[in-house]
Image 1 (spheres, helix red, strand yellow):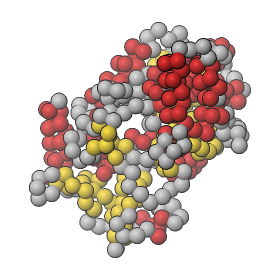
Image 2 (cartoon, one colour):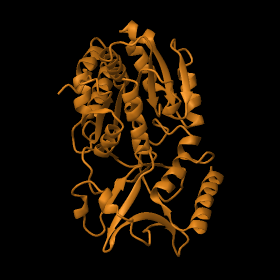
Image 3 (cartoon, helix red, strand yellow):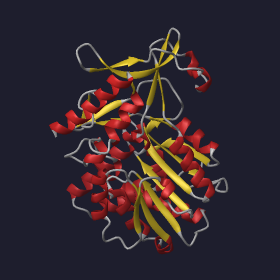
Image 4 (cartoon, helix red, strand yellow):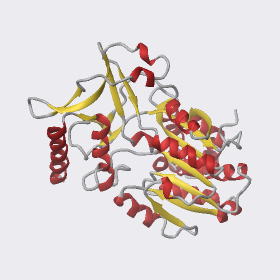
Length: 367
């Protein structure tokens, strides 16, 4: 493990020494997806023994409801005889298994679907293949959504977009400068700013952001993934559900963070050994998808979506007649997924749906 740290750190140092300070987005991309030493390409980061826990790992209820959402979306799509169910960043395959189990209540939907997993991690792909070895639907793996056959499709993405590389800019007296990482006089990585302002950056900013104070940070992502997804959804008369940590409107703020062992860590220490994430700008994501022809639904909070999809009724059904200890765990999971306290998953995590322009309503987003 120490060799991996040294190898990736050495690679980043070499690039900075050769090309100058490195943009935050480039650093984040290397740390997460370097082919030999990237965080996601070398390990299983999930669960109690990992660094963080996602909603599908908290309770089967989450994946089951997303599976029912997909089935209902298929109905809205006029029940095509073949549909590709695509998951972006499928983790251990837990949500896919729960979705397939829930789909049994609609045999026509289950009979129509083929499952497609978009995964860049060899380690996680191996786990997914084991988990889905007994699936009675066709399952295949791809690197990008462009590899999916050009047929009707339904896409789900839970905590996927927050792991895409994040650019940051800092407001200075002479304009916005990209935030970068340099090697300081103590031979350590440090945040800094690029020497020159970003040309014409004010024209790129959403309304209101140009009133930022000196020292404030604005974040953005390359919108290619959102545009490509919007294009595929519009072209295939499909639908997508995206669930992630983020904010409804574009805003000032530094959300870049590192997570290790279920706690916060220094993002500049141990590159490739800690998870790096940043909140999703749902306004920007929706606008990018809409520019490619998709219709945007939401965003709404995770709590609102799950309640509309029936999580409270599902929890009650699971608790009925269950041992007290099991019922207590179900209730705890329900609270964790839907808590609207300031730091609760129910409010911090948002959901947005995309569809072809033909689909005016999608389940969970009716109002």
